[in-house]
Amino acid sequence: MIGQLRSVVFDCKDPAKLGDFYAQLIGGKITQEEPDWVVVTDPNGQRLAFQLAPDYEPPKFPDPTGSQQVHLDIKVDDADEAERQVLALGATRVTEEHVEDHFRVFRDPAGHTFCLVYGIEIDPAGSGA
Image (cartoon, rainbow, N blue to C red; front, side, top):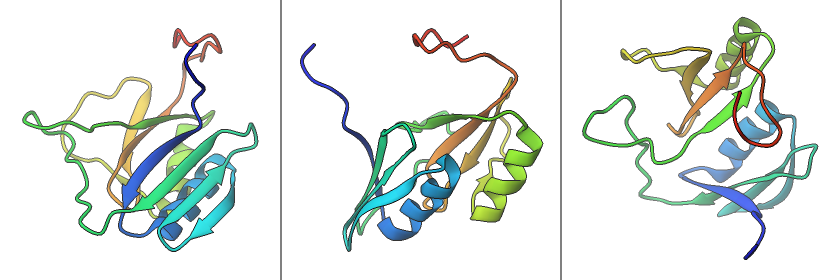
């Protein structure tokens, strides 16, 4: 092993707003907050960080000529209830045509895509199903 993952970092125009969104989404707490940098730590100690990028432009999805770059899969038990909650937090559902099988695609308030994953078991060893 060379090192350990410390944080997944998102560029955005408003780190505080996006940090608050993800703290509520994953049940975390804001553990560091500066004008250009916010860290959210979940109950398991995993960190998401949000850094100021004044010229940030969100990825487009779906886009056959572009890429999401990176996205998070958030496991939920009840997809309908989770959808209601993320929409109330400020997420938007991706309505452009794309394939969904056991997941629903959303954009966070800064435009990053994330998925609510449901109806499948998550293997803690990382194989996915």
